[in-house]
Length: 276
Image (cartoon, rainbow, N blue to C red; front, side):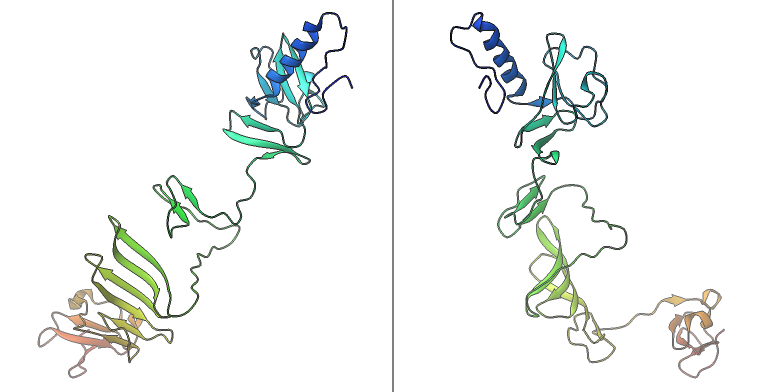
């Protein structure tokens, strides 16, 4: 063999004259390929004078001295281009992309493959403890891939928790989810210690407000119910509001009173007298 099997470095032959020429050729090849860093992999027209030692990965459709050499490493040495075919497992840093590539039978591909079954991932910060995924930034975007998009929070059993927790200074202030059961709850806290269940929606659709966690009616609330107050001139259309709608009319005949829509008119709940 006249060359090494992997990098094709020429051997020095016994009794060879001018051994420095062969040795220098090997050193040039090593200088080209060791710690491989290429300026780009999309430049298709070889630069005329890129500077001694400049390296590129030849793209498909390249022309000139690179024609037909797609995927090879091109280096400018002593006023000309030296091209070397890579082998499986070679790594190259692409300077204009700040990306590390690896050479495979499919060509140059990202050196870091699909992220599967990794223990934890931190983006802009460290993922520690129970937080397997941690992201630090101004926003996090999850978007569709052609149609809709679902964010899924799955728990093992009804008694567990699947929720979104909103914090201020790492102290909880609001929580939305199924907490210790399968009812959807909206919980609030002023200090992260004492929590009030502001809204509960049971799986059968019953709604509890103001601390009612087990509503016994379609709408069950603790405390007073306050209706919006409007003057007669500003009353919404009773037809659009629909029969059964309630509103507080401030200037009804006889004084402020709760009124309802019968589907056509607003009437006082006290005596059904129309107010509009």
